[in-house]
Length: 270
Image 1 (cartoon, rainbow, N blue to C red):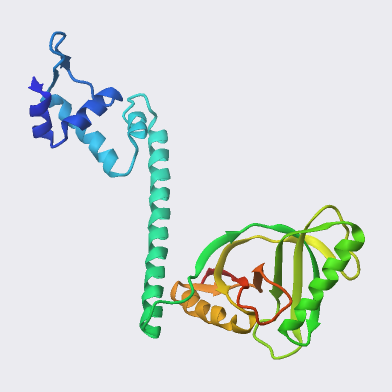
Image 2 (image 1 turned 45 degrees about the vertical axis):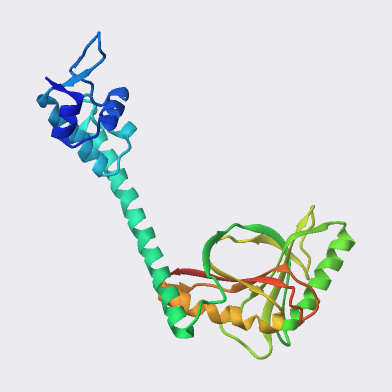
């Protein structure tokens, strides 16, 4: 028999780890001295220890390893646990590859501008939300402001209160100088029905939305839009729908530096 220290040296596993494996029932000493409490191991236990280390190297937790070491565990269940671990590792690899692309995009942006970017692009999931909306062909982009006035008047007439989501959806496939297809949306509290003018519906959620926050007036929001194409292209995405603007802090003035607007583009892997 080998003392725990000698077994630790032989196996290249710390004494602390061996004590933990004993505590969890993964690898019990073959003998414990009743008087001193010393743990003793046998060289015959090395194969069992190596199995523990092999499963640990695959990324299994000690609790999962305890199940895998169960001699009564059916082979089909062992295969199932390995396949789940395989899928988990594949997902982690994909997440890290996506993170690497984002780093490359940041480097490319810094190299192009020779400075740190003013805008941080964030990829996030947007949840669905119930809104009231008016969609019209507008003379230009700023004219969407009049649609919000109509929505607020509609809320007042029907005794409902506006909530905290206020945004615009731009449906044209590209930028236009005039005749802009715009939709104003506002969330609300209470119950109200659609009319010929106002549509009540659930604005769909988006699984992957590339977003950037613009701090400043609407007159300079094009700077936020300019930050998105490089990020989308470098990270291997494509735009798959109408873009949105969410007015976190906004108003009727076009040139107000205190405004906060989030520009959003739905994307998917190209």
